[in-house]
Length: 508
Ligand code: AMP
Image (tube, rainbow, N blue to C red; front, side):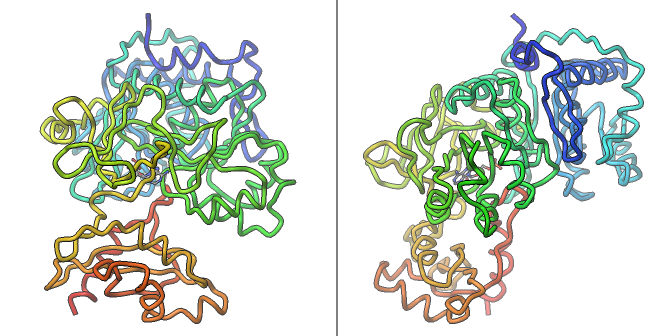
């Protein structure tokens, strides 16, 4: 049987090719028939360019229907798709092209000269353009090709995509995902989250990342659903579209911004069936406020580039705020201590996972891949967490964000939660900064509210307020008050940037 992911998705496309797939901000609609034909033309083009199954197709383009179709065309033709964040600059691009050596690079028209220069250097044979208006030489070159294309047979272990991790420590790594990895996760989520006829997905995430490209699009495509396909998140626009949607997937920032809208509430969400959050921790406070305002309980899930989704709060059972729920069917999850043995209930350790969704390995890095897997085949996620007595998983942060002060471990989340609960605080990030005596000193970067309570906050006041609640070694040595935390496109707080920013101050 052909295990090409596209074949699986296409089997579930609606019988009626006129059914809507993507609804655009200007009201234009891409039907499932349009998607099938356009991906056929593009797949024919890719083959005509001389690319062979297994060759890479890289794309650094804005979110448009054509960009999603390019992804589908690439996997349909048996190629390996490489989505790149449009924010990447010259040196990052140079590394990705040199590392993945694609046969085709699709770029934005405005950076064509740079793309040509870097493609020549990396030996990339073809460069085509796709603009944010959905036009460009990619579309022109595909136009004369036939709509029909026989999806190239692939096995479940053949590569479908390479997604570069954000690489906050050291070199960014290309996580290889196979057709089987993606299919397994897509089918699991589709079922676990009860996708059903009539569902309409509000899609405001970027599509160069696992969340927007795989989790969101695969669920919608497998369900034959329409997506409101928006270039980016905008709270006012989201409020309009929520009235006609049933499912939304977002990063926590989306939910925080919706709650900032004074008129956001039950009425806005009257058709909604499910709100899903992930990619970064959802504050318990946001979870609670969202429930109070809308009557909806956000379903939080956890996963990463290297395997899609690993855990999810239940659809029918209790969705517990501050937790990421249970391992998904087909995912084995364990938490181990320093010696590699399982920790006790409630104790924090390193999260490891095994299952068909877990990636193949890092592109061109067999040694690194080996290091990241245990002898019995579990992937070391690099996240720390604990299981409660009911087996709900709570994430405590990345192991590299763990602060070790005077030889003792401090989990940033424990301190962040205490600070976040203080009046006048929006949120906080706890990091370790180099310290002559302790190795690292616990440091809190705190965002204050713009109201009187926020203005009244002081560094020493924050320390005094949490001192009684924490062992002395966990109490921040330094506190910095700021207006906002640096975040990446997926809403993750960039602790590496905070460490870089505040290390010189700590040294003084
Ligand atoms: P990425 O590979 O960009 O998707 O990032 C994956 C990382 O995001 C994970 O390893 C976690 O550290 C973090 N992450 C994803 N979902 C959650 C969540 N629900 N809560 C806390 N952290 C999360």
